[in-house]
Length: 275
Ligand code: C2E
Ligand code: MG
Ligand code: MG
Ligand code: MG
Image 1 (tube, rainbow, N blue to C red):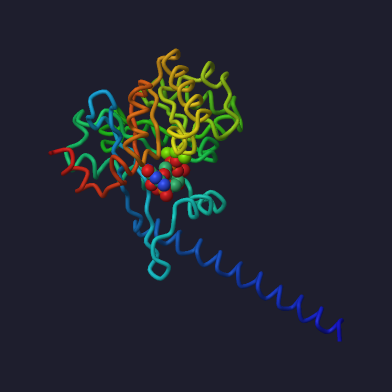
Image 2: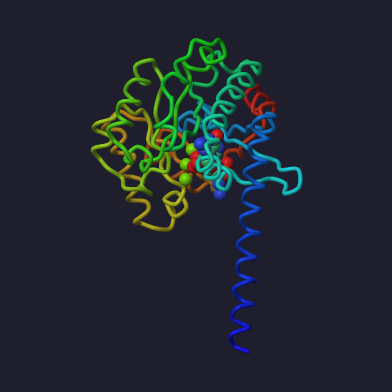
């Protein structure tokens, strides 16, 4: 009896794994189609210069509306794209669509000082350089404002390759930001060795900046560090007025988060900038 139950259990377990694998593959297939049919959309989260209160840039974030599942989070489908060789076409789509939308909205004339786009670690091992230096009109329009966000982990994975890629792209004026700073293996030699322009302080430190002296001290130190290296400091995930006030007092350069604005469709960003 026990043996039978055991066998039954194994069968059930196998069926469950098979069902999960089918779901996984169906999602990959749907993502592939969404990329091919250009069904991904973009939102733009404004970044605010803290001293003046002016919008100084934005971060581009990709969105996917699945016909049955509804909105799928990039935290879920970006890793999927990385695993299934879809990150390059996805990334190209984001780059091109952002450039066209921002240009059409008249925002590539200096009104936005920087446009930040996220790049996955795995893209360092693809043809990132030719992709970002191509002489196509839409890319030329965006490039003077383009900033690439990479994580510490991505940069450190293969520091030699990252350094080569970043140096080559920096030479044509593309800027680099270290995203989620402080959550990976923060390496100070990274700041020393790479021509980066910005440090993005992770939300997890901003969350407790008001009530935790430790978080406050970390943020203060990172801001001072960026000043010493003449880098911009940007705080992410600012949700409360009190957090924004502390950041301003610490001379953090800029900030983004729901307190200032959610990520917006291009029309809403354009309207906000016209006010
Ligand atoms: P990230 O680059 O660290 O982006 C910040 C995330 O925090 C975004 O989530 C944004 O919508 C969210 N956020 C902004 N302000 C607040 C706030 O005040 N409170 C809270 N709770 N959240 C806030 P999202 O859009 O879901 O993106 C998640 C991650 O997916 C991003 O983290 C980024 O690593 C990745 N990602 C998004 N778009 C792209 C893309 O086009 N390409 C690549 N390679 N990765 C992307
Ligand atoms: Mg980012
Ligand atoms: Mg981030
Ligand atoms: Mg983060």
